Length: 237
Ligand SMILES: [Zn+2]
Ligand SMILES: [Zn+2]
Image 1 (cartoon, rainbow, N blue to C red):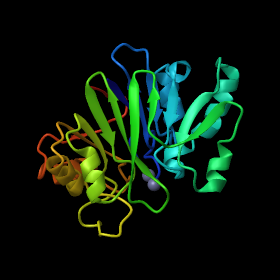
Image 2: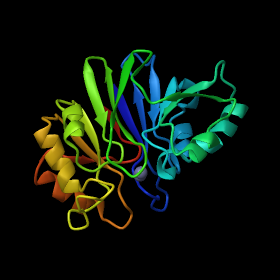
Image 3: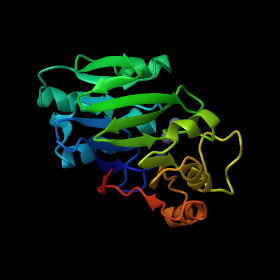
């Protein structure tokens, strides 16, 4: 699989940046999905020339930094018509936000295990203030896991076990983290990748108030091979 980073901030972007958005393509190029579509992701998706190729969109949850660009994407699809509506797999709540996605361009489905072309997509509840799922994608003999927005959770650690690449929510610094927080700290992302025996770790969901280099230092104390998710970078899994 090929993972392209289309956004890496949360809950709002740095100047010129974008929030949560990750493009996954199978090795054959026959299957393409977008995981999350936050602020600024649509422009980067157009830059990757990928809108027409999308087989599905998967939303981890319905906070705006993970879904807001699906709203103008409806307009983009009207100008670049598809043969069929675009399947969108998303949590059912919060209902007022989910209702915003109800457009002729989209087929809305609950976030349950699903096969999209060559990809098997599965979900695991995350620890966050709204209904949120971590997402695993199995394809081409590899397994990719994205934590979504979450704090530590024993079942989530099991879900991450053995991932070839773990993309993790480093929304907090170690100093700002607490057990009831809505995000991991970067240090805990490193610990998760280590404890779950992941091959690679990419940090994401950078709050603009932090220097990502400091977050990377924290994570590398537990997982020396940790890297930052940078917009435009491609990773082969
Ligand atoms: Zn977020
Ligand atoms: Zn969130």
